[in-house]
Amino acid sequence: MAKKSNGNQRPLPELYKYGGPCKNISAKVLRCNAMKAEDLLYEDLAAPYWRFYWNEQNGAHFVVRDQIVEMRPDKFYLIAPETHYAAKGKGYFDHFYIHFSVDEPYNYFEDVFFEIDADSAHCILASKALKKMLRQGTTPPSPTLMMHYYTLIFYALSDLPEDLIAELPHDERLSWVIRYMEGNLKSKLSTEELSKVANMSPKSLFRLFNNQLGVSPQDYFKKLKIKQACFYLHYSQLNIEEIAEELGFSSRYHFTRVFSSIRNIPPAAFRKIGNSYYNAIKRI
Image 1 (cartoon, one colour):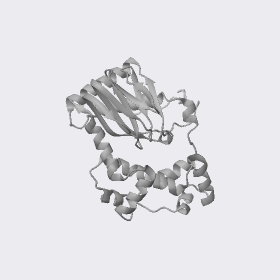
Image 2: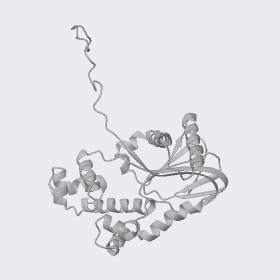
Image 3: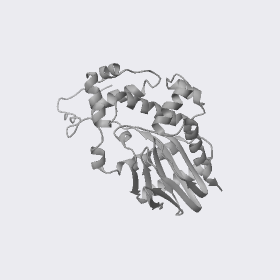
Image 4: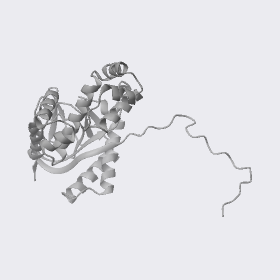
């Protein structure tokens, strides 16, 4: 039986007394892998998703804007979407990576390479995740292993410079429209329809996108479609005709033309590049 109040109980503390409600930020793991590798050579790995890298031994390096960055066991490497870089290595090393997407404002980062000082606790966690993955092989990761991945992802993201994050778009109306776009990738959305989502006029919405993102709402919507197409090409078995249909393109030809205009490479070649990266790492 519940006890009756005696009238002398202390009041509950006020929620958010010292701050506003927290905003949730979620991430989605797209691919993760660990391997004992011998040699690595790949020239351009730009893609529209984030990458987390860690190697347990020396022996590999990145080339970013003509600068060589040696991979060290006491560093994590976080690479933003659309960053052009090469990955190379000689000899034997344990190689661990996670490909992922993440919510705003981090989804606005592009073409940035981060080298992060990793503390001993998270290096131990990365080593543990790597060894578990090697033992499991192609078995889907356990819930515990998935928690390891997300812990490493958010640890790395939390180390990004706050001044860079502050410079990213933070307009809530922009978020509403982009989320609506992401939920309707198969549709044809007019600027008028999108402006109603933001409770703005079409001209005001155009100015908002142009000022914050440098493109029109329609161009950004096409970019989101092609971003999803990249996910399908690297992480699904859908053929190009099925991807075109899934994203609302009238034909394979139409899809290929738009994809090529945005990424400067046709979708079949983009899929081949992704596959060749995974095959470029020789497993021992």
